[in-house]
Length: 338
Image 1: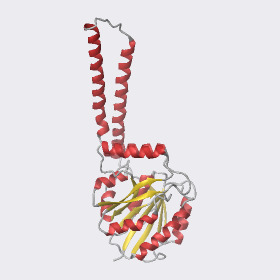
Image 2: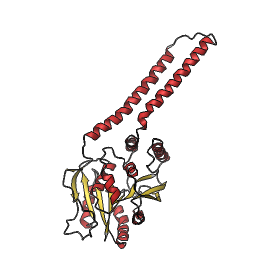
Image 3: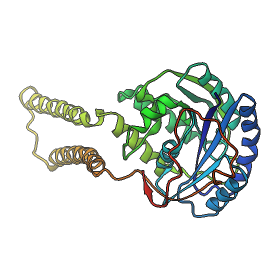
């Protein structure tokens, strides 16, 4: 029985890079076809403001394997990736960014590992070309901090370039979290996992759409969604301040009773105590507010995204595909929430 491999490509303002992506994917798809695998490309336009959607529609018109999905606005990379996962019909599903930093040529190796019996194949970066020392340092710090906070199942130096089997994808799709950190969710579900290593290239065309602000937001999502350790930070801060207070008290008593020196009461120590305890209280309140705010957003049960339009060749025009054992859900209608 012929099996189907779905390749999900989230896009945001990638009109310049799509032709190069198509060129790189062509030999990869041909190689998969030679191993008796059918393929589908699910290209999700995450509310682009350039000609990305028009380029996707044109690509779908000349290639029956392409399914274009346009979201109603920019919901973010993780939501666009979730949309692709929801709509994928394959026995195995691969996520690939459109900027070609993650090489499509690695997909056949990932598929081979899946055929060997693995449910999850993670692509782990050995080196990251074209990135600043600050970004490399913060990325390393981020993964180590997650491990310290107790989220040890998040594989360091792995991104969203991975392969999921149908079984693991079904488990992942059952998790409908609003603030999504998918690489952590993939680690949390378990299943039989292996790794392949590669050198990540610099971005070929255009500029990154993941500035420092979005990186910090993703890091906050990861830490708050997968660990309650930050809430316990209040205990640590209160303990440290208590020790400092006891130390200062011992110092004052020693100065007065041992050395016989009477300290003149001043405003400095009082002001420092007020500022220290006030800052700790505000920090802990803000931390608890972050968790409460996420609970509030989750209990509203809003959809993760909305689909505005879809583009694919009609079934009569598409080449027939052998059944893969997974019934397709069909293309979403305009405005359909997921």
